[in-house]
Image 1 (cartoon, rainbow, N blue to C red):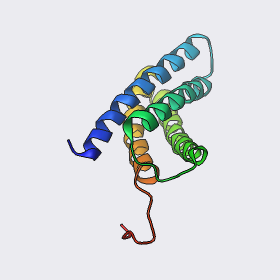
Image 2: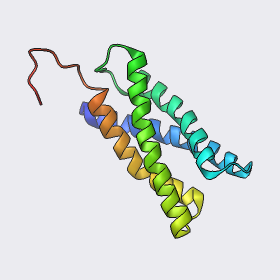
Image 3: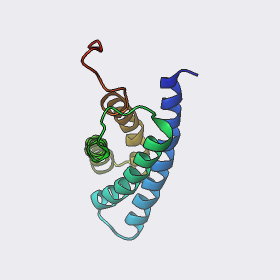
Image 4: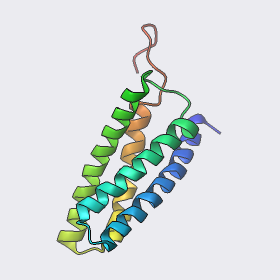
Length: 136
């Protein structure tokens, strides 16, 4: 199986696990009376820790950055961009259109998955460029 397809499928499975955790925490937060944005942030944080761990241990073999703290920071920053996209979609779908919060969350997750995978693969999980490697 080609490496990119393998990584995509493994990342998809890892994302599904992270989404399940995120969604469970999100739903619990709403049941406990948390504000929509707070519940989403809490779920996001738990999902972020899970997806980073699985991504770095089981999905991607190559790492562009040597320093793991910097890698996690950029990984998290991409995740925050995805979170902002999720928050905007939740606001639109729930507050403006009237979609149920859980359905809106799952809908937003589809687009955000592709966004996160593409950026993380390109910026973090490719071989580092050397002075002799061609610019792509």
